[in-house]
Length: 264
Image 1 (cartoon, rainbow, N blue to C red):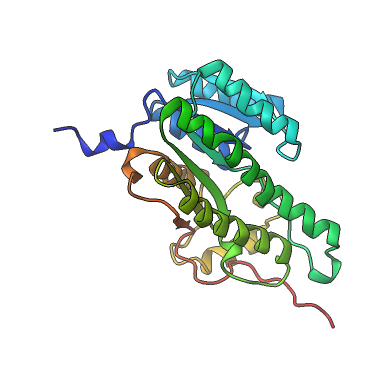
Image 2 (cartoon, helix red, strand yellow; image 1 turned 90 degrees about the vertical axis):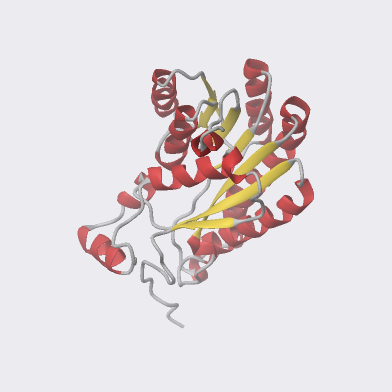
């Protein structure tokens, strides 16, 4: 009988991970490599991508670096084409690239709102639509993991654009899971506050103290916490799981930060 741990292996599989030069995306790339996958590293900063790729290769797996601005349709298509040309198959897509800073609703223009939606939702939909036929053609099946956020589940002042974008991403996950079943599974991770540069660049000691206090597990998340969940969702261990938004957030049931309400 095979070990249960074998179900978490990705031997011979190929994954495309957007935004994998650093932070959560890089941690997922390394987790997949540890499990036996070859990885297409994609982001906008060459030095960061090369650093992630080097770490993948030290784990004995192949890494292909493909610079990609996911907001550019041509670059999205080229990302998939180059991955297929290099590895000949595609098993996993991780839509990790995204984000948006807090912004009061009355200072959020129509253009801001639409840009946030496009960055977080449209790009992930587009890549999913491109990748799914190639997954089925080359591997017979596949898995998509979307990196969503608890900001799309817990409404709070200052996050209307980002919250709506991530809520839409989570709903899109459930919609695509229904449409792509049974050959391609689609799941998402509802991430809480995690130690990435996007957070640490503006977080001070007092903010961190408050956020820790509001988190039942008493700390912020690490990228590896999210990567472990992504590995599960991408692997055969989750073969009977689709359409789920799995929380990796330390048990929060409300916002970890306080933002001012509109002065109206």
